[in-house]
Image (cartoon, rainbow, N blue to C red; front, top):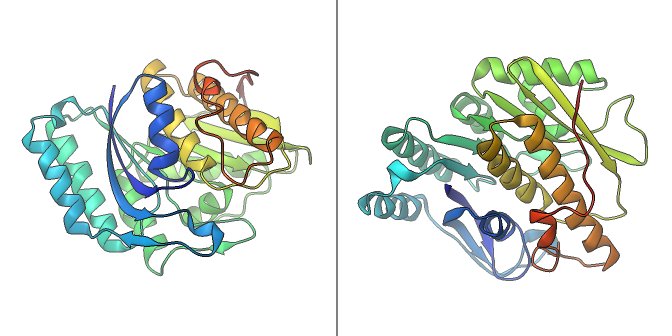
Length: 282
């Protein structure tokens, strides 16, 4: 399995490609990582050093991979946070290049816009770019609940609300939608739900809520869901595997009281999760 991953990079900690690449490699995928930034650490610390790379550099790197004759062997493109619309255009160009070489390649887009409690935290214009340009082109979309609401203009309070919002997104383009965090009227206070929808079918998996707030977990779950979806061609199994692995990763991180997710220390969770949560049809 060959995956082109276009995301941010940090020298210290695990977000963006630094959260997604190693789990994919640990599972046996070849990852062609193109970094959109090189920062010392993630921005959640409030201070960081480094630089944002320009769209021309991203295009140049993808062209170099193309010149090696590799794009026909690319099975998927994985993308996350986009710093500005120019980066987004470069990402779309990369997707089009890969699909021209391999029409079966899947684009898994994490439409990073914001989150519950924080609201929109990306630059002006990015939410609209995600809605108008990325959603129609993506094969897999992995919004959180806030992003699902923003992209559809719907409030999500019930399971049926979530199903309707997923179906609306699918009507615009993506075959598969993974909601990476869901809190509806029947979600217990001590739990977190994740939900996937594909071709009129829906599955939900519930895991215990952990006393932890860290960056990078969303990047990991998008990568893991993509891998297992490609591996098994089954969104239910992919949802179960991804949720189980990320729960194990976050549990280990919480036990160690770490500010950063313990991607390397907890790597066995990617291969053999210590606790398995099965997704249920809903």
